[in-house]
Structures are given as structure tokens and as C-alpha cells.
Length: 340
Ligand code: DAH
Image (tube, rainbow, N blue to C red; front, side, top):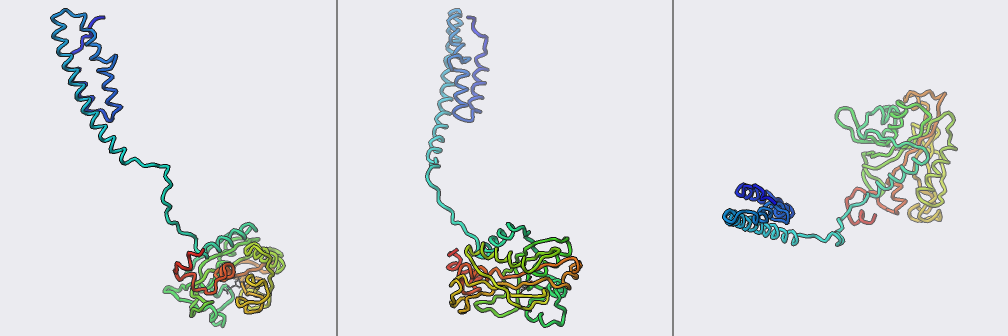
């Protein structure tokens, strides 16, 4: 085999540069193989020495061997460095099979849970969930609901008046009107949301609470439909057989109006402190939508009719979880909240 005509000095330079550039042990091994491996360029030079005339062989042999030593040396140097940093990696090695530290997770507020339960049950009965503004106009909160300025019912829904003619809505019922204005019947919706009252607080009164209104409009939607829907809702929500009853009541936006009570889920209707020994708990207001409200929403009362209801989610949560003070929900007291 003829000796390859390689310039040993430029070979050395090239090797040095490549060693410098080698990013890791593997890269370094590649350089080693390229020059000093079995088929490496320098190895081949060394192998071919035997074919040279003696004088040349000695001279070229000496140089080639020197270069080999040098290259070996700097490769070894650099290998050591990589190995040292390799050890560091070992120190920092993590056992990913060790069970991790569990982060402390929060959980849903009881009112959020109840809201989601309610939404799910009504959605399964074909109702859509609709929301509306908390800062409401006087028109939607009162007038459109058949409560004109001087109507005494405004006293029962005293609220916080904001600058610019808005007020904090006292119920979610105004969204009934907003929705009917924009959507054609037949329709069925529920409207969960925060509402506000200007009143002193006690175990059963808060100035902020959560309500859910329901609305069903069609050609011949009646109280019978209401009883069926609300009865099914209570059964699913409390996951037991609960009886419900309607009694006459008054709301300006419904005619006839009734209050909705259920048999006390705490004592099963026997009588206990929660139901004040009556066996019944009032949970909601409801009724057939007043023709004036339909008109105010752009619907003709001759063509359409339907029912609406509204209840406090706080009340519902109190019944479900047997909570005796409504103020606990927004107290931020972890001793209370951690129980859910
Ligand atoms: N908005 C009423 C309240 O806050 C509750 C209510 C009663 C809502 C009857 C209704 C209804 O939609 O038909 O006390």
C-alpha cells in the first residue's frame, strides 16, 4: 500500500481544532476514532511507514509518533474534564421513581359545588345556563318586572345604588327579561349568579347571595310542568325522595305566584329545629310569568306563557350540607371551608 500523502502538520491542526470543538465525550471519541482509531488517518500514516525508504521512514515516523502522542494527550485531558462534569451530573441525579411531594390543592367552595350540581341537573333536562350583569339598570331590575317606581315591593328589594344610574341587582330575575328580548320561545333557561341586598345580616340574611332563576316559555307551559320539573330537580339534587308543595304567594312579576317548599331533608318531615318543627322548608319563589313582563320583553301574552322560579343557592347549600349560618359562606373561615 502506498503511503497517503498527508501533510502531518495540517492533520495535527485539524485534529486539535476538532478536539476543541467536541461538545461531549461522544464527540471526543469520534475525533479519536477519526485520527487514532483502527482506520484513523494518523494510524494509516503510521502503518504505511514501513513502505518508505529508511531515511524518510525515520523522519516521518518520528514526527507522526510525536503528533500521535500530542493528540492522545489533549484528548485524554479533555476526557477528564468531561468526566469530572459527568460526576457532577451524577451528584445531581434525581430518582424519578421516588413518590413526589403532593402539592397542597385547594377545592371548590361549597357554593360553587352546589351551583355546578344545579347547572348539571337542569342541563340534563334541556335547560341552557345563561348569565347577566351584576350591575343592572333600574329598568331591568324593577320596572320591566312590573315593579314601577312607587311600588312598595321595591322596599323588599332595597339595594346599593351606583353612580351613573346603575344598581347592584337584587335578584337574577332581570335576566329573564334580557333573554326573552333577544330569543324567541319556546325556551328554557336557568340563570345562576350573585345578587345583593341592602340589609342587616343575621344567620339567615346576607347582603350578598347566590341565586338561580329558572324560566320556561312555550305555547302551553303550565304549573303542572313546573311541578314536574322542580320535583325532579329536588329529587336529583338531594338524592332522595323529597316532597314539594306550592302555596300562594305574591311577586309582582308572576301571576299567580307561589312559594315552593320541600319536606325537610334533615328530619324527613317529622319536625326539627331546621324546619322550625313544621316539617317543611321554604326554598323558592315561583309563578306564571305576568303578562306585563312578557310585554316588556317583547312577547305577546296571547301567544306565549310560561313559568319562572328563583331560589337562593345559599339556602340550597345550607339544606344540603346542614349549615345553620348563611354568613359562614363568605367568612373566609378555613375551619368552615376545609370541611368540604
Ligand atoms: N326574584 C325573587 C326574589 O329574589 C325570586 C323569584 C320569585 C324569582 C318568583 C322568580 C319568580 O323568577 O317567578 O325573591
